[in-house]
Length: 391
Image (cartoon, rainbow, N blue to C red; front, side, top):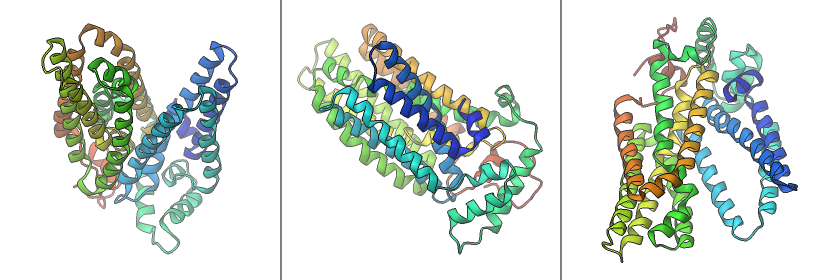
């Protein structure tokens, strides 16, 4: 539902709706008297987060200039890392009810913050609010900035797309949109099936299985996540998306391979003294590498490559694939580990290795290009204006 809701009511109101669902969910968990209240609370929070995971990167991509867009969009992933790290920290000394109550405060803070930010200029142009569109773009770029060229390009591109028929999910598989869909869906599939949520959700169990302290391992994971994500933010608009993605995927491949070797040696009772450190180093290499690029860049690219007339259908599909992949890996991980611990991580390493090839062959570089340039180069429809250059 994320794409349709965001297109119907706008980016700001969609974020406010998400906050409402999250607040209701956290309060239901806090006041829960039985399992059903916990389940309903989780469902409500899940709905809110499902919307936010799509809306936030799209909104950021639509309001930022092209030379800063990647870094700003990746800040979203940095904030997620900081939030999850704080949750891990607070969870060590707070009860789950108190932790649930704490979850309400970021939602309230965002609701207040939404009163002070403009609506997405591109969405305003799409729905025909041209006066508000120019006012929003001017407030984002600064009062003294000349926005005439950027405003004209956005309006020209939006008007061209408006003449195209409305799209459904099935329309996404037309030849003219196929490249964008393959890139968007493919990145989410590789991101999730590379094993990130298995590592995050079961880190303690992995460390224990490998013979290492779960507390020390988990703290080390949290410590490495934030600086590596911060580094990714600064490198995003310097090195570009493709190099960061390939380096990140190669690192996650190496990390999974090291963990797999640790379990393999343990199964054959080889190098028993160093096996736990193999597992620790492998998990830290995986976590650091994922935080550098694979964590945030697929969402950045998803927010850049889809034209606004198909962003609702495409964004919903990509977000659904991401969360569905997360569920499959999280659900299956325990069964896979019982089947073959080493084999599980070698499978993840293979997926991460294939990610490098996928990025090298199919993912375009989007650094320093406007959204209109990116979308025109990937989707075959005429813009009617020779002004937009395709690198």
